[in-house]
Length: 185
Ligand code: MG
Image (cartoon, rainbow, N blue to C red; front, side, top):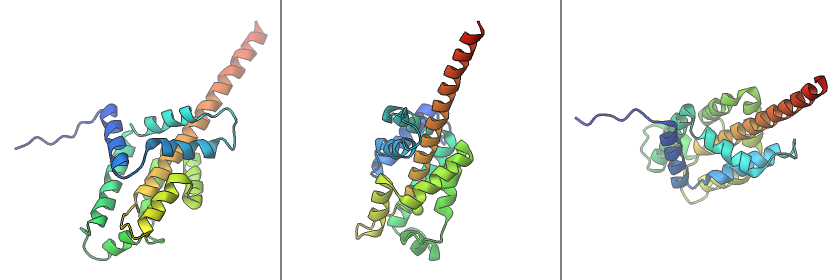
């Protein structure tokens, strides 16, 4: 009997997540662009490279690995019409009131707290960049299904945007601290 593979390092998970995203037509740098555009509204010290680093960090998290793996397979199986019963049409037509895709998105964004989730809400409503592309692809005659993926990708962007904001606040706090300490001595 073949031994099941259950052990994945963070490097393995990152590589597999990147492979799945590429296979489903998503370049991780497009996710970073959404994070950058969202966060640069609030801070002018944010740069695209930090957003790309954050996306890669988030893509190495175990919860994200599990959710992306599952979501991408649901989309693929929907395209192949492998589901039985009402769920096949509900998934294939990306029914607006379905909501399970948003639950997965909220779970990913929630790794970065309530702000992660509100940032996800903003992306979910406004559909910037690659999210709109995925959404349009899923509704045209292409027959692609991105019902799960658009929310998961949006949530990764929201998580990256929140992480970058938290890091820049930490850096600012550290700078402030060193100035205060200089004054003390
Ligand atoms: Mg969706």
